[in-house]
Amino acid sequence: MNTWDNAIRGRPGEGMSHTLSFGGAGSFFRVPYQVDMVGVDVAVTGVPFDIATTNRPGARLGPRAIRNASLSLAWERPWPWSIDPMAALRIIDCGDCEPAHDDLLSISHIENHIAAIINSGAVALVLGGDHFIAYPSLRAHAAAYGPISLIHFDAHTDTWPVSGNGVNHGTMFYQAALEKIINPALSTQIGIRTINDDTLGFHIISAADVHQTTGRDIARQIIERVGDSPVYITFDIDCLDPAFAPGTGTPVPGGLSTFQALSIIRELKGINLVGMDIVEVAPAYDHAEITALAAAQIAIELLCLYAVNRSGTTTDENK
Image (cartoon, rainbow, N blue to C red; front, side, top):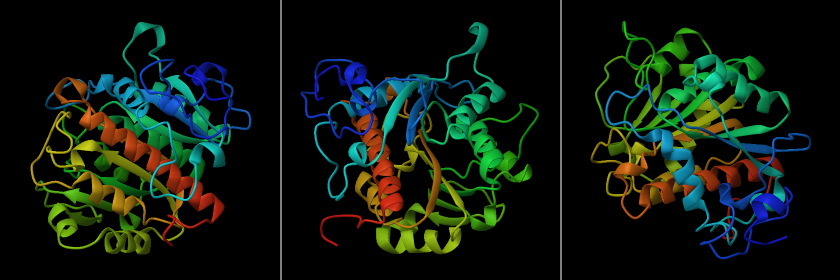
């Protein structure tokens, strides 16, 4: 069924919703809203949380902005992929991780929310929220899969030591490595353009490195690093240059273009992808929804990647 209210009336696996973008219920790419995980391949969920920021707040409105922007892209199969992820996978939007008892979201609350998706047999695509939300998400994934190999797109390493203020959106991967829920020796950070002398063993691919080579070459380095280990992709939208993603809390000039980021994602065929997120979209600083639109495009291409890796089909129509 392809109607404006596909989010309410549709069923998972029916394909892209060929409807106009400006009306109807606004789920992620108009997939059905439901909480029943039986038979579901991927559950999209929002985590509207931004109290771990150290600069500009506002990412708590990111999940809503990404969903809204996705409606402009929901009418056709993503180019250049040969697969329609909405037909190849049973994808639902299970709504947002809601605070318990009107309190702000806690680590355990977010972790339990995502663990419920994983334990149902589905893969989670998490819409942030500030980047801290990757920490409880990784805790949930590590409980299911063991230590995780991280593919981390960002302007910042987010591996600064935890201070007296606790874990925040710049220290959570330091904490995750300390707890051994991620394996830095099998992990890669892409787009980095801030200084942190202690890499903790992560393979660093700076923004300058990306500018000097191709997406295929970057992807080859990543694939060699992760091997067949369980992989979680986390994409901080500030990996993109502010020209392509101004709507974020901690922008850094000199970043990737949207095309460069997508070129890398499209070449990650064969990785053992078990979870993913896209974070730090702060719509108050956006212009004409270009940041939210980039995030929605990255999100759907992550789903294409997951669908291709499950099916073994080619990445695009030209291969």
